[in-house]
Image (cartoon, rainbow, N blue to C red; front, top):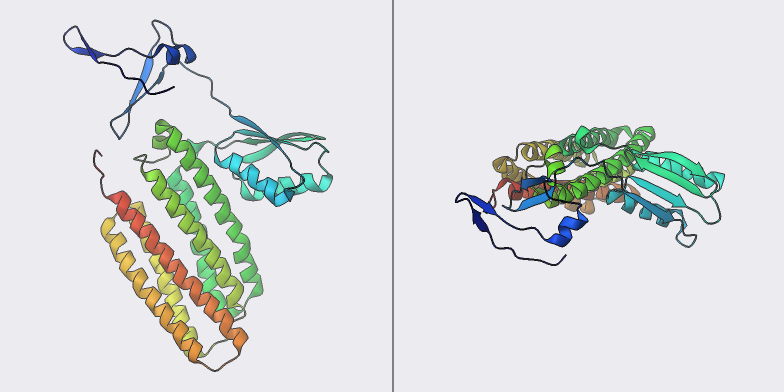
Length: 339
């Protein structure tokens, strides 16, 4: 419906009234005597909708598998359906699903899409349903869970500097899948919250404009997880002098503390703590660059140096992503015009 304008009328000397577009009223099934729900939003607009009880809406979609796209391409389409909020997705295969395809689809869904389960299948169809209730697992719950996994991975990655434990590194790499799962869940939550102010409040979002900020934050956290995985892969193979090793361990522990402080500032929307985190991030990035410069001067095996440089690069990037999170925290922590 195009924008329409209505004049406010004064009724009875104390009540403002406004007429409703008849086309909208008919499409919404509104008749004389029905009640409307009015929700005041943070930007001083009003959300108007029928107040009568409605059955919970179930959003369904069909996705036909394309042989040209391959498994990864088709699964990206499924992820896109998950992110935009479909409750039921029917995967259709014109030629039918093989046993191997069914197994792989089920494994990937369990591994990557929180709340999504296979509820039915036939020769040419697999039905997926989301059992996720946003209000039962708030945005803050998801961010806390994601941050705990990242910190656990990170602490083990720093330990792997000296242990050269391939099993520990493999475990860290495997846990990165959990980070990706929570990232996709939070993106789905944020998309849903942008379309439903009441749901946003239930999920713990104070203002709608925070959606973009949280989107940037969780993407930074997801990238931090990727760099922790890179640290785990390379640390077991790096061979560097003891002095540089101690410097890397010190920088590593300091960046871990920075990550915790950054999330603490975010949790309390504390712009002063966030500002300090930015200063610390800049200092640690400079220290990481100094160790890189020192390593490049050392005369040693190229292989060990390459792996150490890759670890240092990831440490520096993690500090930068902490800086990004802190900057968004400051932006969200300042009350905007009209708040």
